[in-house]
Length: 159
Image (cartoon, rainbow, N blue to C red; front, top):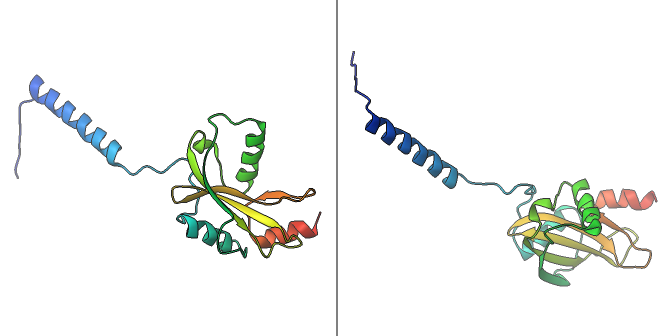
């Protein structure tokens, strides 16, 4: 049996406490952080946005009709709150991205049920899909969150 003993004086105790704080600080700083509210889909940029829509069953034109960098406002007004509620219905939440830069991709959909002019927006933060919508710009148009095309067919047949 081996027994090790030491006398703990104030200098050794202080060094031990400081070492523990340094170690804890290093662990906190180096631990990978997940962005709060990050969505389930990690796709990538242009191809990823299109691939995400295709994974929901949409057919789309190869190139987006629009690609731009946008900045969400730091404080959401009633329009943004309503839009964010639409996002929450589909498992997204734009609240963590207030005041942040996002990339918006807009695609023309070619298989939306009963709507030849349907469009889809996909919002990305880096390589994460963080929201978006499917809509028609017609006067009697519609808008809903990113959900599978089969769900869109169900809702279009039940007005």
